[in-house]
Length: 216
Image 1 (cartoon, rainbow, N blue to C red):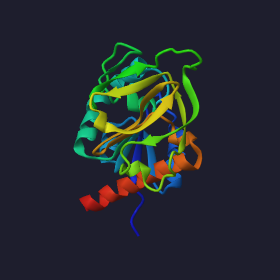
Image 2 (cartoon, rainbow, N blue to C red):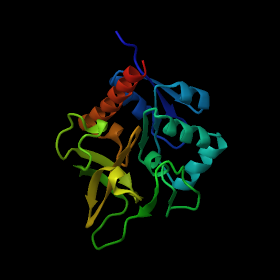
Image 3 (cartoon, rainbow, N blue to C red):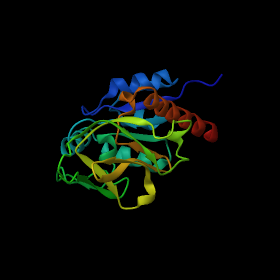
Image 4 (cartoon, one colour):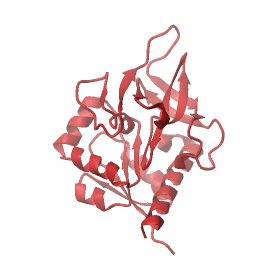
């Protein structure tokens, strides 16, 4: 019987780490909450969670000397999953602040445009429209699955092809998830999105296991 994959969850004081760990553990992973680059590098997969604002997130990563290691891990082919703010900081920069992002994916983070009757932040349940149906995160996911969102800003990738799912809030349709090779990320919180969200976490664990098999 294959051993459980080890998934490292990045600890930088900005994440909903414990809920994510619980969901990953339910899917059969062994989780490690860490800010140690060596532990991140040795893990089978890495999750970058995030709750809060863009600039403090980048500063916390810089203070822990995690920016270069995270870029290297993403470039290495290791399964890498960003959640909410953890997706936004993968990009070049944000209208929310002045710090440069990680630049793992090209693009910017923008604020929702105000319009009559539109609530900002976009908070609550909304349905996904899948634009990369073969993305590993979506395997056996119900059509138009409902996910839980909390955000005032959204990612605008330079290349639309990296968008794996979109969501509509008011009159604006924006990126809800991205996927480019081993780098996967969601604007919504799968760990707060009931059974469908837990299925996404389980799919990430399965993806990590599939990459372990390839490397074996």
